[in-house]
Length: 287
Ligand SMILES: NC(=O)C1=CN([C@@H]2O[C@H](COP(=O)(O)OP(=O)(O)OC[C@H]3O[C@@H](n4cnc5c(N)ncnc54)[C@H](OP(=O)(O)O)[C@@H]3O)[C@@H](O)[C@H]2O)C=CC1
Ligand SMILES: CC(C)(CO)C(=O)C(=O)O
Image (cartoon, helix red, strand yellow):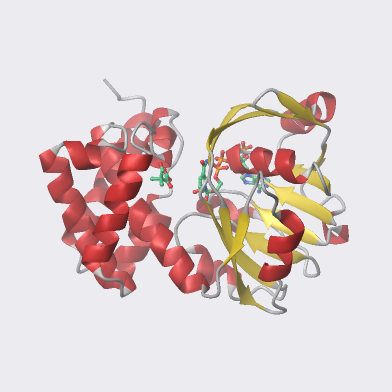
């Protein structure tokens, strides 16, 4: 299968390395510097090199059977996607649903439960072993076929029959753990270990569950399990702030706030707080 991966970040490089073992993978990047680096060095994941061809956006994109979109939510609008290949979107959050709904392509969605950290233009570390879940969105149903074609024992991929449930169950985790760990600059386990952060986490969980039609008590138990199992990790939002990048706060917490028509005071507070931290980074005011 000819697979194009758009975005040579942590997830794009991780996927290129794993899927490149079996499929013809092309990596679409937006800088000449990264294109040159990948074409000269391949993609290296945990020290293992895989030869991958990198292209600038749009070069031969329409010849791919499948395009996997691995850019951040806030970069989706910058993409020009050809109308024929099947598309698979892997973003955290849920604001991409409005972007996807108008696309003429067959579209599927996925959630990534791996941890990955980009170390250079062509190198990535697989920091948390997990799985990927896929569900159909619109057009020809392709998710179960992709599960069979792309999954392996080492890199498991599972089918989910309801994209809304699949994304909601990931979103509720991110809307609680990510902003609090980013604001307080703590690893995930502090959601449980610090009584004050825990109280705020429960309040965010209540708002998030209400917005998504999920049962609060069940979701709180899931969040506790994930905060424990990923206890030593930095959340992706904390990493974004530490590396002075924009965060996905609007795609994650902003989706909940919009669903509740602004009636979510704790979400409102964390959204403004994370934007304040982004602005402090941006202006170089951090102390
Ligand atoms: N990292 C992780 O462990 C996990 C990430 N996710 C989700 O996966 C998605 C991707 O995350 P992640 O890989 O970490 O993000 P990164 O920021 O590491 O990578 C995103 C990449 O997209 C590239 N990009 C942006 N715009 C374009 C464009 N127009 N054309 C081509 N490339 C473009 C960026 O390029 P440039 O470098 O030039 O800016 C960057 O390399 C996010 O929604 C995230 O929430 C989900 C679970 C875990
Ligand atoms: C599950 C969790 C919170 C792990 O860190 C995550 O998905 C993230 O950091 O974005």
